[in-house]
Image (cartoon, rainbow, N blue to C red; front, side, top):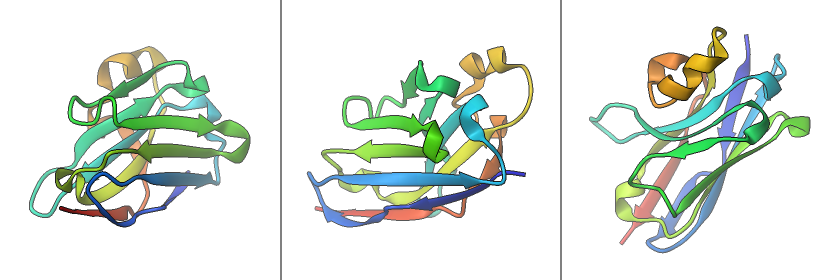
Length: 130
């Protein structure tokens, strides 16, 4: 069972930047799709970004496209989320997830579905003030 630990959250003013990290242990994640989701108080967990094994393909939600960048360094077993031009509506608890075992091909259709991920970290809080 992979263990995921997110870090890098904090409080910033609108327009600022943060880089989140998701460090994995107990499993080599290089063969797995990975995703970032976020959850604001009282709301559901929603998709932010995802990346395939090898990092060849990435996807973003419309609300973060052009501002956020997902990446991975497999020799560090770590996935990153660079967030630029942060807005107050980006305030949330950010989680990274590791896709569950299964047909890799389905990840291209299901990357935005939280149920596609079988392992999650504890989350890191991002707070953006106006």
